[in-house]
Length: 154
Image (cartoon, rainbow, N blue to C red):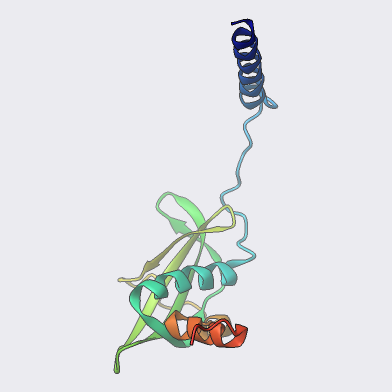
């Protein structure tokens, strides 16, 4: 019985110590700058689109363009935003779609990448987005990776 009481006492001391560490910290709230320039914006956009393309059977992209990040009014705040345009090619013959998306950043990180239905991306200065044009997408990409690694089952 004494061993159980001793273990319970030690566990409660440990729990109190951990709680003290988490609640007392430095006493200051860390302020986050929502408008840190998104230095890795191209990598973040490509990674997000690859995940989206896995879901909608896109196997390649052409004509990809991207605008540089700029501070823009978003509601009552200013945030870094940019626009992306591309042509997506799907698994079915003739499955081709032009798409324009607007990216919103918070504290230097991609927060949203949404389809544009209005004129939000008209008049922006687009540049070639070779990283997206050359991205490995979909099942064809997975098959290519298996063949290169030699880990194919057949």
